[in-house]
Amino acid sequence: MSEHMSGVRAPENPQDVIHDIGYRHYEGPRLSTAYATRSLYTSSLRGAFGLGRSGKSKILPMAMVVIMALPALIMVAVSIYIKSGKLPVDYPNYLTDLQFVTAVFTAAQAPVLLSRDLRFMTVPLYFSRPLRSTDYVRAKYAAMVSAVFILTLLPMLIMWIGSMLGSMDFGYNLKHFAFGVVAAVLYALLYAGLGLLIASATPRRGFGVAAIIALFMVSEGVAGALRGVLHVTGHQASAFWISMLNPGFLIDSTVAWMFGLPLRGPAAVPTTVGGIVFLAEMVLLAVGTYALLIRRYRKI
Image 1 (spheres, rainbow, N blue to C red):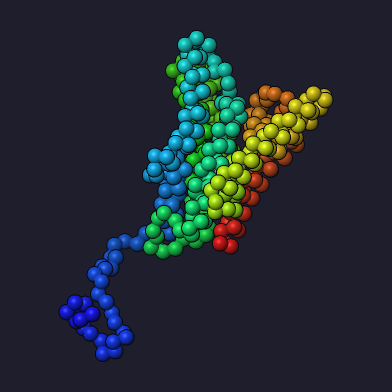
Image 2 (image 1 turned 180 degrees about the vertical axis):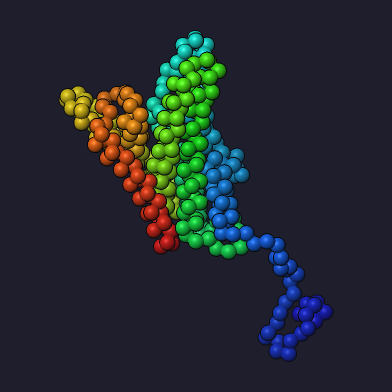
């Protein structure tokens, strides 16, 4: 390259050449690592619902949102039309009835947040400085927890707003809506944590989806069958312990114990000892999955 073309004085040693390729130095503000973590969180939360991605990527998460919210909308409309004065399903029970939707959403979207990054060892954002593994896990974990919480909170908001429009008991619905919010938080922590932990084990999205589905569906089927057997054989008082095998039943039983709500189906409300054990298991699952994610990404 000549001196005229390069815009730089030609060096004496032809092996040491500095090329002027026209890049300008960045002279703007440099934001903190916390800002980069928040950016990754926002990007991941949008990605969990297919926002900012192709139309094909939006189909499944948006379908799960519609399936989760539509029964609540129909239930509210019918209750208002017939002037029943009360919703036919309690708020926490609604989430239990549709726990399979939460499971499918988690199974489909947890690998979306992790698998591509694992496979290509890149993230869709460009950072001026690298994030620590703990920052990455914190952003992804918070995004998935937020996505599941939004999914589970939406139908209960519809039910609560509908109860006010139908002039139903305000105090009762506000209190039970709060019970439902607690259940939604527990669903978000447990389902998101378990889903991300499994998704982090493989860079192949299909394997992650299948493994997460298997965990939730098999545990629900086994727990349901065992509860039925105990009920038929006259061991109703011990049936609640089977809830520890399935996250959905575990949350349902714990919320019923915490707020004195009745349980439907072949299971009894946990005793005081049982309730404490259930709470301890949920804390262990939430903290344990997060800690294992941190450990996993420190090795990558």
